[in-house]
Length: 244
Image 1 (tube, rainbow, N blue to C red):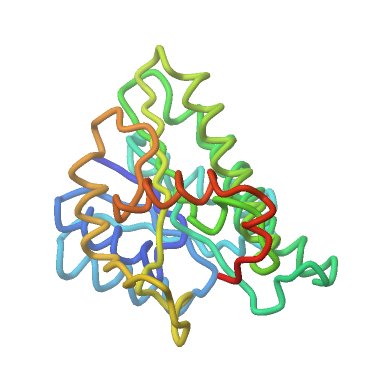
Image 2 (tube, one colour):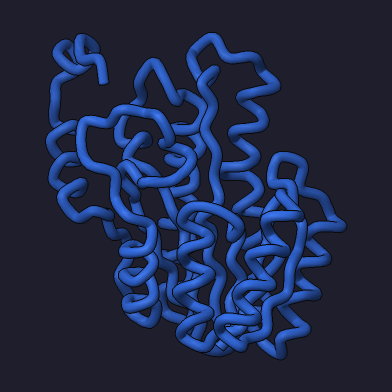
């Protein structure tokens, strides 16, 4: 089968690319860093013996050319069976006082660009069994004074995926969404976390194992579903005093 993975040159995206390639799937891998992307693609071709097409795509400035390239690359594989969107970015300046340009960048990378890619590839994903997989964050559980734009964008993405799931609930297009806890990737490098950082390789195995199932929204690690429920239940007068 053939899959598109956006954000495939690092972190969760790279782990997914290796997991799906080892399972024999052909890939279109997209990311902003051309050098890392081509190195990843070349290694996948050699190690796994699958077709791997590359598209350099800056999600902060996504344009018609990039969308056309990813559409063409997916079409060149002879059909598309899945789209995975693990890309994302954070910023140490993402506070309530962040500059408008930084808010715009974080919103584009973490939400608007994802919606654009989905809309562009929808025609290739319909009419046969296929899947779209999105990745959110526990940072979007409730608003707080840091990761402001990132959390808002991830919450918007989760809502968008819920709408997609509803719209295509009676079709062959399966829509999945993973709410991720702290992951052991470059985004969390040097950051002290309240709970252990999860392994991207283990997550990629879970995603592959569930790729054909109607899983809806899943939390990874799974204990974050309970934590999410607890945090949402905290009264505002208490919540606003918490510093986490």
